[in-house]
Amino acid sequence: MVESTAPKQGPQNHHQVFGVSVNVPPQGGSKCFDDDGKLKRTGSVWTASAHIITAVIGSGVLSLAWATAQLGWIAGPTVLLLFAFVTYYTSVLLAACYRSGDPDGGKRNYTYMDAVRANLGGFQVKVCGAIQYMNLFGVAIGYTIAASISMTAIKKSNCFHSSGGKDPCKVSSTPYMIIFGVVEILFSQIPDFDQIWWLSFVAAVMSFTYSTIGLGLGIGKVAETGKFRGSLTGISIGTVTQTDKIWRSFQALGAIAFAYSYSLILIEIQDTIKAPPSEYKTMKKATLLSVAVTTIFYMSCGCFGYAAFGDLAPGNLLTGFGFYNPYWLLDIANIAIAIHLVGAYQVYCQPLFAFIEKTARRWFPESQFITKEIEIPIPGFKPYKLNLFRLVWRSIFVVITTVISMLMPFFNDVVGILGAFGFWPLTVYFPVEMYIVQKKIPKWSTRWLCLQILSLACLIISVAAAAGSFAGVVNDLKVYKAFKTSY
Image (cartoon, rainbow, N blue to C red; front, side, top):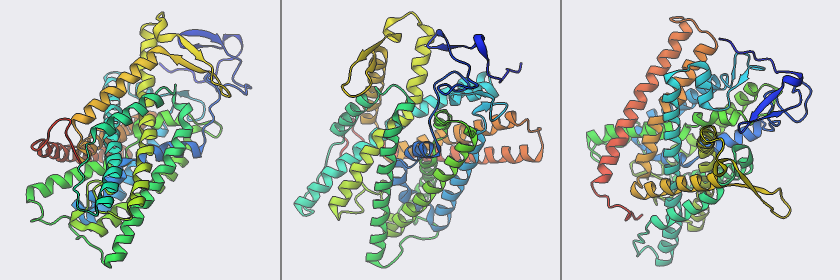
């Protein structure tokens, strides 16, 4: 069955808003509404790029020196470039699936799951939803861990400076996870994705700040010692065992995959873009710009971090205390990380929030608790619309992610697992399969075979990365005590 993509005209033009049918002026000549009856979208190449950079240049950048150290000077930069290419290519395939049929006037898919439903349907929609929302949940945990590590690093850096390096300065991460959780409860009350563009810009600036500081410190360390550390094949046998070397190499693949992952929120970002020109063209430009900028940063941070420390490259470049001075610069970098992660947490969680709230409204349309909005006047601004269900459920969500973060505060392992778990299905498999359906690519044609080979290769990488990361968690659990992790 093929759905008509032409916008309805005249008196038949009714739209459902939170389950209520409302009349909307014809979209053909409307200045206020888009072709689907929603208020005009205002996003551009720059806002989309800001969202992507906020999502991509996250805490993942900090583990890249460690990942490069596991792989060495040949494989490390090569793998970074390959992941960049695959991420860009599959993101362009995915962006083409925002509208079903015609890329300019086809029916919009508002979320990743909508795109899968429109193109693949059936059981695959449920599989995609489960993977996407579990991944978003996992990212919230990963970001809570990363933010708390950065906050403890500030305290540790100042303690180390004041004691002249004599005090080991062990700091518990639990209080900082609680502080981060409280801040996220407040920010999670921002109703939807469109209203956090300013938070994305702040977060994008912060990500450039700490990435640049990490890069600068790496270059400074290389200049100070006058030599590039590291080897062509990575961390040497002897420093670690042969088995550990293999597991760590696999884990490094997961860390790099996590550093590039943002496909799971690409359609949601694309749904904020104004048209004309078509959302696909704008998203393609934003993706190219963002992935290019990200890759330059990643190559620089990963390579200079490895050149500075060699086999001893820390798991988190700015908190692993490869650097101790200048301590005030490290403090600025770690403050920037914490602020960035506040924004990145929201960018990732908004699609999950929207899905739960939309489902609740559909199941309980008569419930005042779920649907009623209370207007709270704010002097000088529009009144804030408080929804009790949103307040309660989003707060519970943040509390749960915070508690799990306290129970499993292993930054590198969590990052590797998330990267491995989300990379193949969300970044490669679903975009490839949807694109094949959308463009009606014949089975066994050269293009179809090339896309399937790409998908299979990425599946093998994901399985290897997951195995390495789980092996890392098993090792960490041998010496771990719940709620008592100190850095």
